[in-house]
Every structure is written in structure tokens, then in C-alpha cells.
Length: 147
Image 1: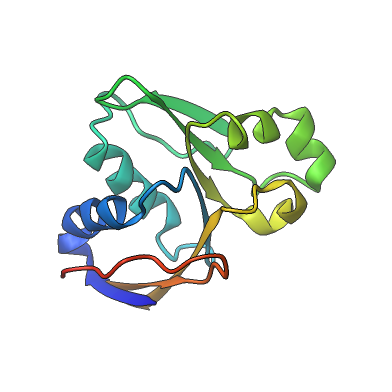
Image 2: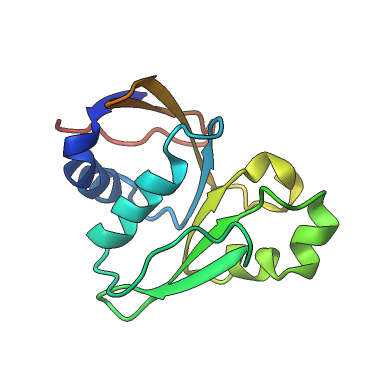
């Protein structure tokens, strides 16, 4: 499934994404540098009611936020890691299997540690103001978006 959205509608798209994500807890965001992975994850966190600073975990690898429901959200950036062993040593696998929401950038750095029900999303820049989401998970279809 494919969703195209303008950046000025990113919050609405993030809200619809969450509604349609069902019971999925682990989301792996693929895309080139600058495609909008962090920006979309920021919008998802806002839509889940995160208060305070939402920032890229490029250097920390894992940022933990609290949703409005009180549940933890893990924002994980694997860009600086070499392999799955580094991800495991950093505690990424613990987050992925914690039952909490995990929003992961650069999942291709450690593909073998993700749960089978991970929802994989490709983010592509269409132009400076437009992004495209492609749901590339083979395990289940995600519902329709209303844009």
C-alpha cells in the first residue's frame, strides 16, 4: 500500500497511520538520508501524546518517551551501528521485544533482530514538500488511509 502526503499534513497522516496500524508495536522505517524518517517519527510521537523534547537518537541510539497513555515509546536509530551484535549490545533487541511501541530508523543495519510482525515502511521524498510511504511488510496488510 502507498500513501502520499504533503508535509503540512504530516500530523494527520501520522494519526491515520496509528489508527490503521492495529496491534503492531514495532515499526521499521527505511529510506535514504533526508527522506523524512525522523520527521515522520516525530509526528507519530506527537500524535501519541509525547510531551517534551522529541529528538533524533543518532548518537544515543535509543530515546525513550512516554505516550499520553503512560506507555513507553522507543525511538531507535541504528545508523551508526555496524551490525546486529552492536544493536544487541546497545539494548535494541530488549526494546523490540518489550511489548512497547518501537519506531526504528535504519533497520537494515540489524535485520535479523526484528520480530516477525514488524511493520516495514519505506519513506521516499517525492519533492521538497511531499513524501511517500510504502508499506513493505509481507505479513499483513495495513488498513486504508484517509488523506
